[in-house]
Length: 406
Image (cartoon, rainbow, N blue to C red):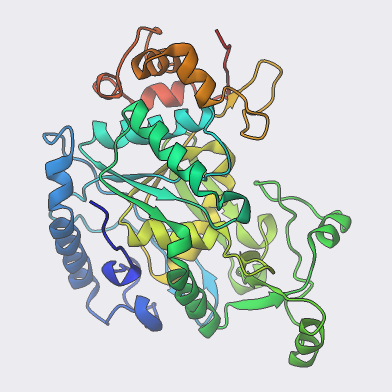
């Protein structure tokens, strides 16, 4: 049953030094409770809200573990973020696992998309958890209702059912606007007039996700210069990251369930990044952080091509006072010629795969055998695969996987 989820439904939890967090403005603010009281209140809220999820879970006898929080000392006015500081006090009741599907309707799903959704589903179900379906359709190329309908039909055909949703990002713009306003009110953003061509022409080093590392060309523009340039071209909005001299150690750290310990120095390896494009579209980083928090997501499973986005999302979570979920990135599926599978090239299109395999069990069994989830390609349903799913297997096969079409 679809629920109207907003950030007002989410009780943000700041876990850190109780004396170091300024009161956050706007609808994400958390009253100055003692830190133990805040954790206990949030735990009770999550437990109540997720009672229905535990009833829906396929393996209710499994006790899921609470997500590991990245603990920071943060002063939002100082505009910086520190590295993990301590171990969180244990909560009385483990937080139920909530995974999510977050596909974009930019084309028919290919086998790599199916693999990502399957891993997210298997991980959540094997821990007694639930799944939220979110359609990420902010970009113009994704605003095709017929493709969203096809995507939902494909997931249902595969037997990868969900417990909440579908939610559509185009219906949630007010939430992204409110989060952006909070960052702006704290002085953490600035207008940027650099074009993509200008950024690439600068021959700047590139971040882990392939985007140029922004060196702050527009960071210190005067109000007069901003007004002059705005009359000529609409600006994008960038989020400031800590300067190297703002903090001795500006590294964001997290442990990925597949690829282990990760760290990134935001100032030198990322740079100030976009939270809104010049055409007014909210950036992926901001939208997914807001949505994951509002929907109570505790576990994010996705392709390893998004591993480099995670430090930025963790940074945003801390600035907005939101909890950090577990992250688990999975290997990409590659074509025999070494290319990533893509919707644009219609690589192993799900329409073709449905016709070729005939049943979801045949397709899922073959995919599980190809990727190491199962020992062979015997036809198996999603429920059968969940009985034996293990992240140890994914870690053992964490190199990108070449898929041979039959």
